[in-house]
Image 1 (tube, one colour):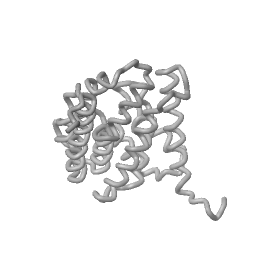
Image 2: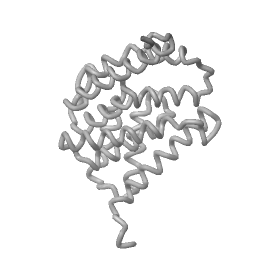
Image 3: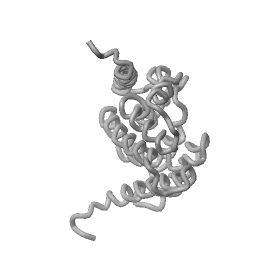
Image 4: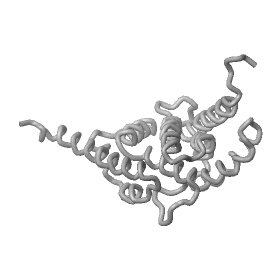
Length: 215
């Protein structure tokens, strides 16, 4: 092994590669191509990993558990509504084949299994599960969500006008409940700010299209 190689990176490389392969498999099923115009799933998972690690440091969560869970949380997205449970089972099997700390694997699986839903009636108890849930939902709010969602719409091959995009972007009934469901103080504050930015974006675009910004 090279002196410059960190053995702790072995499991990180493995989960990243496993997730990337899963996004290509999903693209093949959805678009009949492993090279979609826009790989939404990969963009989403990378964003979740970044947010989750920042929240983990703020909350004192186990960063290894959070990072592994963030990379793998949608690894079985092709399973639909059952993807959290199937993703948890995948994580248990896959991580056991890497140099990821064995005593932390179940915590990763439990965090993945708990990330379902766009809002919650009751908060999660594990701080790692809280962090993953918040990071996953934060990525669905704000300007990041607007660009991810628009890219996915084009990848789906939908012949949409700008007006169609605006109408579809406004057709949401879950975002405020998502903001209210955030567990961590930083995520709750940021989610509210992101939702405001998201709404402002579409308001501004609509104003430009209608010429209302002309003075």
